[in-house]
Amino acid sequence: MDSLITAAARALATGDPLGALNRVALRDDAPALALRGIAMAQLGDLNRAKALVRRAARAFGPREAVARARCVVAEAEIALASRNLAWPTKSLAAASALLEAHDDRANAAHARYLEARRLLLIGRLDDAEDKLAQLDLSALTPALRAIHELTVAGISMRRVRARAAYAALARAEEAARWARIPALVAEVGQALAVLDTPAARLIARGEERPLLLEEVETLLASKALVIDACRNLVRERNLLVPREAWPGDVSRDVLLARAFGAKHADESHRARLRVEIGRLRRLLRAVARVSATKQGFALAPRGVREVVVLARPVEERHAPVLAFLADGESWSGSALALALGASQRTVQRALKELAGAGKVQSSGRGRARRWMTPPLPGFATTLLLTAPLPGG
Image 1 (cartoon, rainbow, N blue to C red):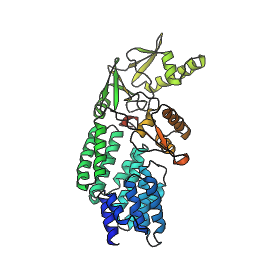
Image 2 (cartoon, rainbow, N blue to C red):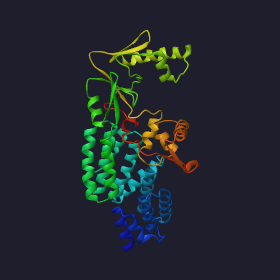
Image 3 (spheres, rainbow, N blue to C red):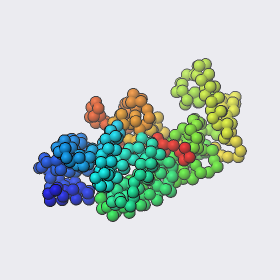
Image 4 (cartoon, helix red, strand yellow):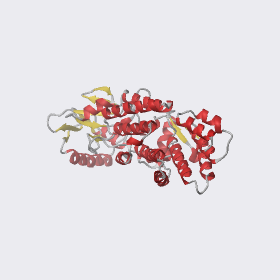
């Protein structure tokens, strides 16, 4: 490897893409193409970066399998940054195994972290944790250790474990300072900011107040019967409970409007409501009673527990879509559908409505179309992302 390639690689490792480009911008050999691609990715030109990395992979000879594997890892990282979550994970796993076999442990570990971060984005937290457990932490560079702790913190946030997230981010902050990569330091700072912004609203006895993620964790550990309207759960159990009026009752008209979107209810809607209330009674029988009243239905907890509602930080019909877009990255409709576990048609309808209301914007056309929005001001969206609650 010549001196310019070595110098460019060192510049990229320290987060200096312009310094790297100054050394290899006019070269078209395979190593230079790969470094130019990584530099363009760090500068945010992801389409150009992807094209350069692919050119580099084709330019490396048949005996340069390790170099081609590194290009696969680089392309996967670009795909993750551009929120293309459907990239071939088998190719990345094969590249990671090859790099491990050739003693390139740093890039092999980086490949595993990319897969773990993808799993985190689509809510497969157990699989992400399993992927992290396969890594030897003692062999990590400071940059990889920071990425490791950021991933651990992300999993903790999604599981509503604020204290564990704080601890992981403290370790990530220290590792990022050692790595001396400004973009990594900034990413840790953004994650810390999420923990210091309201993640939900607490509604109890007609009053409400914002809650930080740490306060949500405390609430879920309390004896209160918590109805989580962010994720449609009762505590850690997967039970749908659409109500906020305890200790009063909720009228049938309100329940019909919320459950079925019925503006003018007929007998078929009322029959469906009776069926759903019957199902709800069976699901909740261990923790609460649902009884009929003259106006509608009322919920009463078994024992002396208080009933509280954990509501979304902001009221929005398509809040889960906005929650993913709030990371500031550009998402494709297919990636959003994968992350949300919904059909692409459903997601496209939601995006169309949000775009009509000026809440999201798109760029590109067809398969290249991407959607994004600024983060919701003053609110974290952790509880709107797909993930089980503690104990789930």
